[in-house]
Length: 107
Image (cartoon, rainbow, N blue to C red):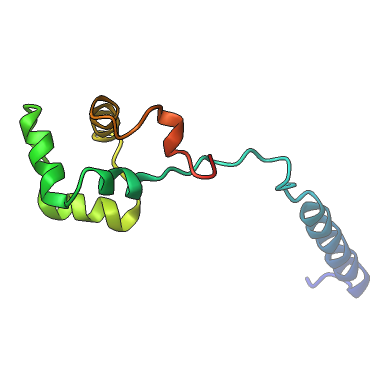
């Protein structure tokens, strides 16, 4: 049996009201903490070319990533979490950084 027109209209109004209430609860972006951005491209560039990065990692006694992998770090401005601590430590020990906070964009 089909619902009477008045019931149908009431259901539509309730759905519209529910959608309106959900839309009014949008997240206030000004209150949300921002994720930090890092200058990984500048860090990798400070070591020199991609091959130099691979050679430096090898000199530390680690099995280095492939050359294309280091190139991808530059392209993405991202160093995987597996490698980031080593790269940052090497930069600090070689005097390329004074403090980790220098890597933060906007700092």
